[in-house]
Image 1 (cartoon, rainbow, N blue to C red):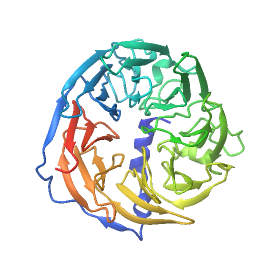
Image 2: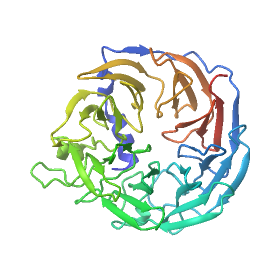
Image 3: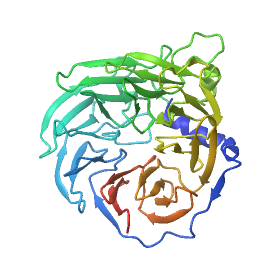
Image 4: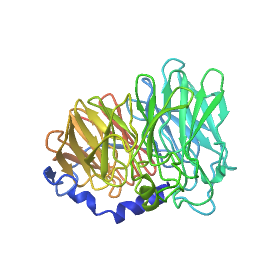
Length: 416
């Protein structure tokens, strides 16, 4: 699955309006309120959520440059240009294509990790010193299947048990030959273990957030594969998979309709699974959500279905309430034995985060960041932040938000 097919599904799906018919609907204020926004211009757009490193905030651009920014005012403390970025020839909606997935900061080693794509479409995992940006490690992470020129590293990097996890999917337009994959890189030795997402091809792993982290496994979602006919062998796609530290699959869930979902581009791969209230929760593109048991995902046809929404990106959770990144606006659900829709904020489409007692989510089409009342979904604030990349997600750093933009980073006070 690629972002192109995903966005096509957004336009085709009209079902999301019925998702929470019994939920409250919020409305936006007439125009953005005047609020101090500090823009920080960098050398390219920032697609990945910035990483909080305590004494610095790390942002990475599509020009393959990593920046350490002051948490106080966003001033540049250091920058490191790693490579010349790749320029896709036939498809893709990010050009140049450099660092797309969100960086990860390791407080134990004081390293910040990014995957940079170079001019020859090689993907390299770099570990940089958080103090001054010098390169401490670099490991090639070109996936073992498919053509590297048609793969991109879109999801947030994740650190877990001394390993860095990086996922790969296709380009906007679904061109070329690719198979989704996860690299598990041992940060100490540099050795790489791979999980291949599909036995039939495709199965992109690109949802822009991070996997859900369990006690002994990580939960990822997989997009649509090339097996599209009922009766074909199951190819591993349209699924939630649990991987161990070495990227070995230890459990999975797929809807009974996986083949039809693949054929109609209605897979689960557009949303990152989220753990909340004792469940793994997934929605994806079809509007059908599922509650899964973290210890036994259920295989093909398992799980408890619920009417959700067409969801793209990472959700936010607070206790038993989950805020889903729905294509038609953030939606809140209470998770229990049954799922209860609470409200729908129709004016947002970015990934929600929680800060200062509010739910923050962007409308990346209009370049506005909204602060939503978590009880009602009504917009308490809306802030014009400028042009945004798809799935723009603010990072919470103390009493500020650092939000990647088309030109760098915007800094917004949580309480101003």
